[in-house]
Image 1 (tube, one colour):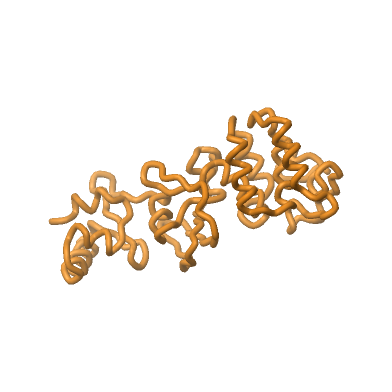
Image 2: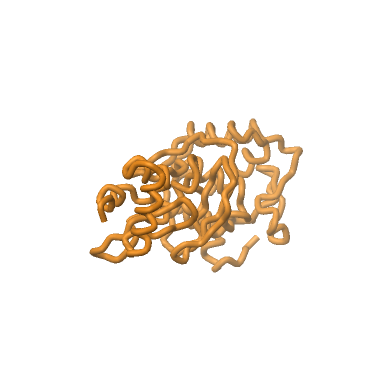
Length: 253
């Protein structure tokens, strides 16, 4: 228990973190093993630990803290970022984590930590010690990966809870990916939330200017049978995106 108080100040910690408190590697291994054996520390996975809060019996590390410590640059993304910001209110047991480094996916305390590789760390904030994509990046990333990280109905439910975004930051992420079809997908999806998100006509004009309408695409590639061609945005999409949440997931095209 000698080092417990200091270690408990770091919700999720690595061997390196512990070394900065305890000292040399021999002492770190000895003390960590002893603390795990006595039940004051839990091993989350290889080289990742958390102390136990004795007053509650819970880990000090939340799933968000854990996601931020899996690699040196891992951060909450997609569905998990929406959850972190409070824009999704149902239980979801997959923690979606982006990182420039691949990690072995694992489960801990009923949550499955899923790895998504990224080449960009643009718009990753640190909020109360948690690394998380900005809400603007989360929106762009989710549309870009729609059908793989969440379905359209889930995305609509998240967007309905958001009341303002920064157009400049949306465009910054679109420029990072530089995919003309993504401009059209984003324009189509966010056109249903123009008033909610306080987006200007200029935003949609720029999306149309960047998207080459001759190159058709699918909003959700794995849901093609429910999609119809949208001539305004030059993609196959749902007839009415917002109706998805009113139909219990049934698509009204």
